[in-house]
Length: 343
Image (cartoon, helix red, strand yellow):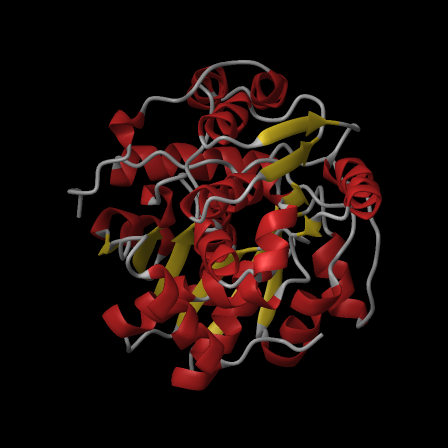
């Protein structure tokens, strides 16, 4: 399996540009005061499904063979990846089946249903849902869409980085949340092709550090998964993103779940934008490691904004335990906070 090239990213942009808008990137002086660096936010929370992964779903769906379209797609997800596959499948008239863990984020579940996907709930977490998904794919001859080991997904999500470096070409660094690692891998491919001097830095929850440890040790590692951030909640690392990260990623840092919650509150207060816990990871990184970014020009990717009202209320109240509990309850969060005209 070959990693995508910069040419593949350019081709992905041509495929998705008629379906997905260029998302804004804004500079916020209020964040500068808190982080000690010039902070730019790439607002992937403004995507139609509220997260960056839709780029990969549309790119993949656009490249399916007639046989794959007839068979239909199946994938495992905690939410955003599944919504991206469902969105792409709907665009191209393809049936999509999404395997989710029990207690998946209700906001994301509702969105996938609205996009016409068939949902199957199995297991306690993403990795248990993934194993069930792989069994179903083999039994029924479906086109299995791995959430990490898919070159078309990586090339698709890499288009967010292409937009960043075109809009703000003189960056010192881009900080990217890491769950499975497709977003960070795609960012590396683009940044190192356009301007190798731009540092690409991954950030993951210390309560789910499988990708971080795999990057450090140079081999795939399985580790504990206890994070409240479902977008970062993987127990295992994936081979294809890791191959790219080992070659190109400049640094990899960890933050706590409490720091993720604090960064969610900071993002809302400073930018008037709603972000989910994974979407706040890059900001949490800047706030935890100010000396690492002092006086630099840094872009952070707000990778998603899908939270429930119950979860949002607990986050604003400063309740980590309540936020964890509300991952399994609640309704769609209000879109009012996602204002594209703020900058």
